[in-house]
Length: 122
View 1: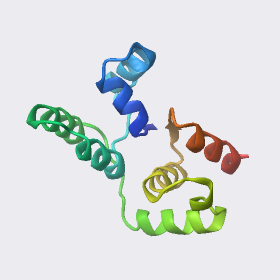
View 2 (view 1 turned 180 degrees about the horizontal axis):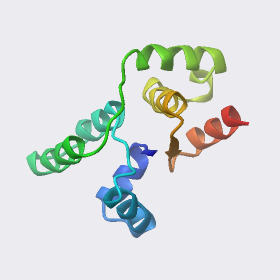
View 3 (view 1 turned 90 degrees about the vertical axis):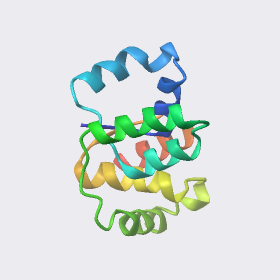
View 4 (view 1 turned 135 degrees about the vertical axis):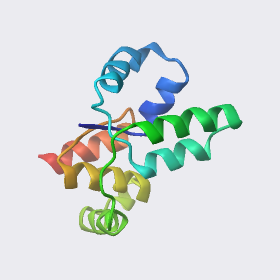
């Protein structure tokens, strides 16, 4: 399973060809995992009811993981690795904690997040 972060979802939803093929392949094979922090951010940026319906439709139909205590784990992860000082906010820490907890890959276009993923996994 793969967690696509908000940057990847936005790129896909905007119709970019950069992620489209890989994204759709993962989507159709049900290998994309939906987590609430990403979908919360997507809904935050939705401009109209059509966009809300599209985002909600993905949320309702994608596999999910148990998120119990995940924000607590995210806060501890941030504290342990001093991620806030590296420009990584709580939602990105949530994504990191979800990836670590479930042993899932994280797909991001965010350079700061990518650097942190690489440093934590080494």
